[in-house]
Length: 614
Image (cartoon, rainbow, N blue to C red):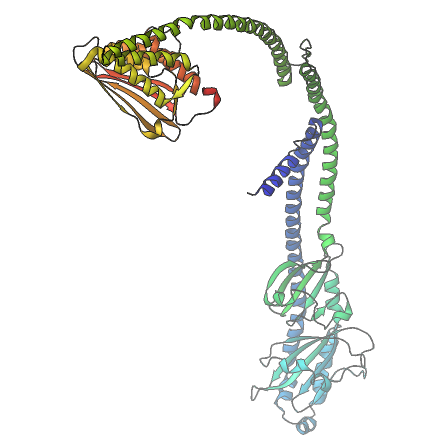
């Protein structure tokens, strides 16, 4: 993540959790969130579920209404189909259907009985306004004597006439009124049926029964769809057969899902345009009509609107109560915190006598009690520090006196070093080279001790001191002592504590050679452990250290305390100085086995850390 992105994330985090706002604001905001968020979640879920339930109930109710209307209309139309079958089976109709020409109709005198049959059928039902019978030879029988109606020969020229089934099934045609013929703007419902000849079984005539549309209208208007809903009837092509708006009858329904509705037998959906009405529809397989109920979204969601208003009022009321309770709660928390803050400022300014009153036993009360105790301890510590500083000043004065005594005591070592130089000169005059080298080595050791006041030194210089010491011991033990150095070039410049190797080598000589008659070989080597550490190892082939003494010595190294040490003080001294100089991760490790020699490993940092080592 880039620095800019990290800053944006930190800003968002601090803003979201109000990190820089007062505690009172945080308590009020979070308490409001704890109230509002659950209520909103529950309210939205309730609103969503109630909307689904209301739509489902409206869908079921509308389906029941559609089924009832469908049954009424189907029974109503079946009565007309029965009348048409009764007329088709009448003897006069059978005789009429056998005739093949207009001349034959006139000469047979069948027109009067046929008109009587059609008029009797029309008069038998008040809702039949007109019956027409059209022969293929253009013979027309019409019960209407009104010249203001559409002529039968003009009806058969309309596009729907060619789609009348030839298998004697009825076809329902809804026609808008013609402004030229019909004076009253009332749609016309026609029941059309093909009649076949008894001789050839081929269609020879078309029976057209015009039914009073008001009966269909009464059935549809008698249905109650909610408060503002309504029922519509569509033909197979999506044109209105019935609509509360007469001007829409005969025209195509303007619905966004009309094609989908015409492909389904039943179902429901909610429009996504305009007022978003909710439609429920079902197909009548007998009539081939689709009955559709329409409910405006406003009415459908009236119940959910009530739920939503109730939810908002509940949120506001609950939020108000939560704020009142939250203010009291915040006051009970913030007031003692502010009091504690005020006393902390006094302590910061140096007033350690102030104490905060404890008003409760809760976490804030416990915090206040701990603060008072902390101030008391702080006062005690400050007093101790004051007296400690006084003692430190006293110790510094004493140290100055000690340094003065040390300077005075250095006169004797200088005298001793001068005396050694005199002995060395006398040995050279007598050609006693061994004594000269021995005295020179002793002088260099003494000069090294006097001139190097620092705490650390390079490994190369410390090796040189060990070399001089071993040369001196070589004169003493001769062939019983052999030694070698295996120091790589990179290790010569590394830093080590001053006089760290000489006491360890001296232990090898004292405990390895003086207590044994066998020759002893000493190896001083160095190796790198990792990128931050290297070791210096001193290995001898002496008699080793018994197990109990080795354990005691290792315990002394762990304690790092010369006062409590019960074994080798020199080794503990070296270990302690290394730990003080470089850290607790560095120091000495011992490994020894009886009659197999001793290994001393010094762990040191690979690079110097700075002036504090010196």
